[in-house]
Length: 298
Image (cartoon, rainbow, N blue to C red; front, side, top):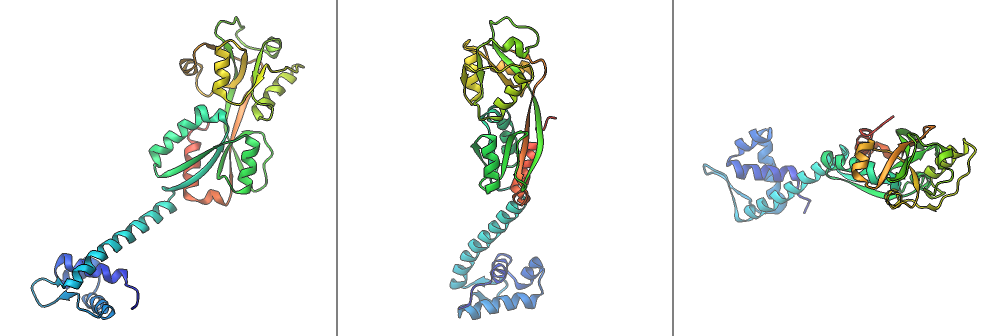
């Protein structure tokens, strides 16, 4: 027995629902002989009559009723499959692997993910917490689709790197410290310092800021979790230089026990979006990239 034809099954279901061959032909935009041929071919394939002809309304035989019930399921599954493929092509469904640092995860990424959930609830964004260098490596290897990385950073030729944000770095100080209106490297030189891990881009740009003033500071502690650094500042353990991703007013409403003071000279943390060119053509990846771009800040 040859495989069943979905078009013929759709014709059968439509005839049973509407009651006549002519009504089914009109609904399906087919010639009536084509509708008759669909039923004849189904009956020949099954070796049994599936509809009762001749009455005012076409009715299914007992076998035909079983076939109609199964046909409805098959057609529903076929329609669902086509809809899923369409949504995948349009980028409304899929899985996107994103690499980012802890600094971005705390403030920026939740806003991006909230917008993704609103606009594209069927896209699953798999978040990997990585350093910028490792993110670049995994993008080049094809085990990530998008990376939010601190720049400047060497990038393999197969990657596209686009500037995303430039956030000011500020000094987080214990609330009871007396401090000038702007914090200089010289003022910080003899203070207990809380730095990012020495393998990070944040550490590198912080040390370059000090080096420009001829200072080579030593950290009291190094760690990579931004919120933990802020907690240590609030506890009076030292001061930290971190990016300000909200206004100072918003940040102070979130973090108690600290004061935020701008740096002089100014220092910016640059963040870029990186992806592999071939993979970026996938619809879901494009929609994640578009959502990330909504939070761009130059």
